Image 1: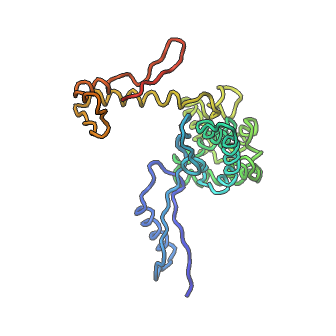
Image 2: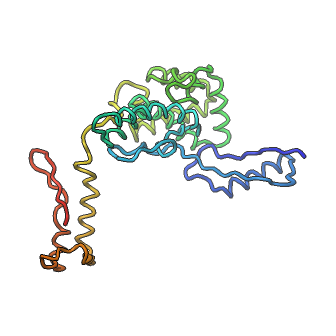
Image 3: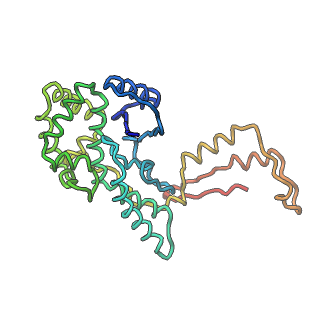
Length: 297
């Protein structure tokens, strides 16, 4: 018995198409090609996160892979990028843990910086525009896009698909000068209508964000850095603390403190006293910039 593997995929979309729509397209395509399916032995379903915001700075949780947006924002490739990034991230964490007094915030910041240095962010921003442009294209536009793309020299289109330091041909995209050379060479190889659409998209995209111009010019500043800046565990997430204070002060429910936690030698607090303690300031910032926290009883 002959077995075949068929795959139907959506290149990139926002919002992502449903699995059912993808499956319906799949069977219509097989029917169009005159392929009759006698038996389905296994089905695979997969969503690949592409694009999206970079990880939040100054956090204690280190994400990796899709949770650290390491998926190529135009192609969906991730395995080789993760394999390359794992070593750098692990080395950064190990270096901090080997110190006399390890700091978890510094370890996480160093690991994120190993993945998303300003240079890596610039390269990602360039690829992110590519994903945004692809989402706008119809079938004719996609065919024109890929026709021009694969007319480029191997080093240029291979480097774009790599998109991560250490991968093959990535050096063709590691500087702003090489990225803009790629862009100019690419756009002149596109069909006229697709080239005009891309030029218009570049202008429109650049008016809404500086990310693209930041990746292809030496101007518009540096992308923000993940390098450790200050000891955030003393201050914490101030907006969250302020929101928690507001929610607690607005709440009419005051939980009763279990008897086992009360001091037998002092009278139990009244409801008003408990609520007053809840409403105490969570964070106090002095004029000199120092921060003090109130520990709730």
